[in-house]
Every structure is written in structure tokens, then in C-alpha cells.
Image 1: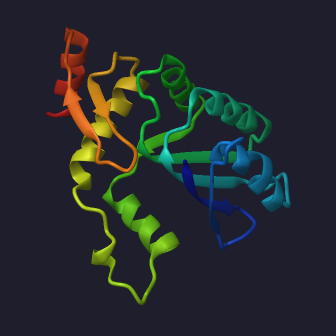
Image 2: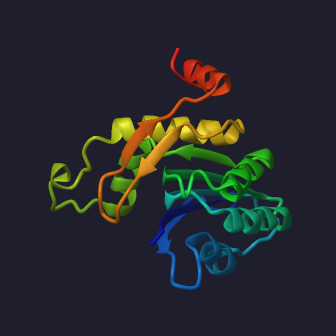
Length: 191
């Protein structure tokens, strides 16, 4: 299951539209947003629109193609994507898809602590609850390792991480540096 929190800011409206959606058995969250949510919210095709997605997983290769086509048809739209995890990070079609989005101006980042905090305060927070009761622990290592892997993808460097996960389990990371190109990337990522 993929979850997406989103924010749409129109140049002709001061208040952003904020909501969420998720994948279904037949449709990924990105496609639902493009085909349903965006079309329902669009009122003035000439208005500039800034969209931010906060996603549980990065888009797959097929969704990256749909996103590219959508952005080609919507030249006034700017898209920023924050991801919690990278979807099948060793599959070349997924890696190429993410690179193709960056090449057309999409910003893709692994969610950092300020982004998680913003999502929590904006989309989740219940004023009656103690935030510490629900705030996930130990994010910093995940953020660093997923960020490293995203950089290898965007720089077209072979993957240097093994990421093992079982459903509803904590991911286990193994660093596998095999060649000089990976060593240079790792060195430049950690000065």
C-alpha cells in the first residue's frame, strides 16, 4: 500500500489545498492524483500550480512515465516529491524513471526530519494526543541511507545498498561498496 499526502498551491489562491490519497488494487496513488484529484481541483488552466507530494514510497518506473506525460501537458505545474522509502531500488526501470523526472525539473528528496515533522503537524496531529506517543523513532539512519541510495540512482551509479524488509518490519540496511565509482560517491556524500 502506498500513501500520499499532498499540497497544491495555486498562484491565484492564497490557501493551499491539502489532503491525502492511497493506492488501490488497480491504481497507484500518483495516478489517482493525476487523473482524479488534480482534475477536480483545477479551475484556471493558466494559473501556476506548485504541488508537493509526501509519499511512503518513491514512484515506480511506470508511474514516472505517467508523471512526465502529465507535466508535459501541464507546463504551469511545478512538482516536488518527498519519499520515505525507495521502491524496488535496484530495478533499472524504477531508477531510470526517477532520473527522467529529475531531468525535466522535478525535485525528488528523501523525507528528512523537518519534512516528517511538517507532515505530522499538517496532516496527522491530533491536539488531544501526546506527539511523543506516536512519533517514530530512529529516523536519522534511515534518512541518511535512503538519501545515499537516491543519490546513487540520480547519478546513475550502481546501487551500494542492500535493503531487506518484511511487511511491517524495520528495514535492515547493508552497505555493499564494490567498485571505485561507488567509493568516490560514498566519499563525496560523507566529507
